[in-house]
Image 1: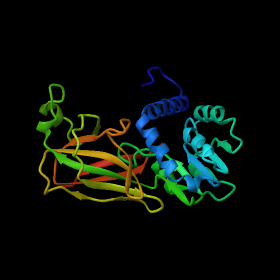
Image 2: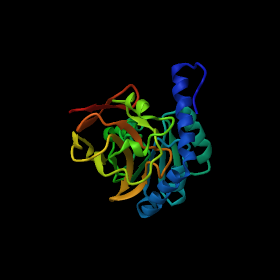
Image 3: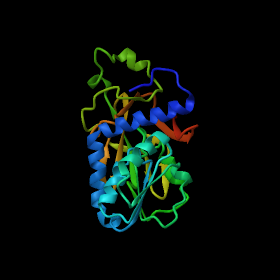
Length: 268
């Protein structure tokens, strides 16, 4: 879904965020995976003070309220989404919608559980940075771990009549999502990892011992080392592809106007 007409910048961002959440909730596997995660931690939620960071339509706030949370703060900075969440959650006396960026939110009481879905296709390339700049420290963050896995494969197993070897050669240096359909088993290592409260861990990755001319990345979200959801299985996150142009590469993330952006380079 794309916005095709000219809008004022602030309105464009608000509507673009709205459409992004429509896409997120259309990924029912992703939503079900997060609801299973909440049920796994229902003892921490029941009777606790909970926060949903970037609550969108308020689906997970509603779930925590129904699990018996004493208080749920549904924090959402987008006014359109906050309005939708207020309407959805109006009947819950234990839920308060807060129209504010999560990194600016100061809860009036200690927080037991914070729930979020801030992961980008490349793990840290959307809003995950905000959790590293909170003004409070929750006892439990869900999910609290994620990694950007990678693999090296033979492009001859993937190219077709549309994405030919010549097309692939023209994509050198570009990370392209959804370029090919995954076959399974591509991901064999970890390029970038994140956990709360330590934060992001990244560095040069050496692939000189891995044959293949096509590099592929996929997001994995974890809870206590177990997979919650991952790219391809949850279709809203796709694999990301780039032609191999060396034996070592580096992914870095730097602040952007909104969120953070990924810088990718081949080192040799």
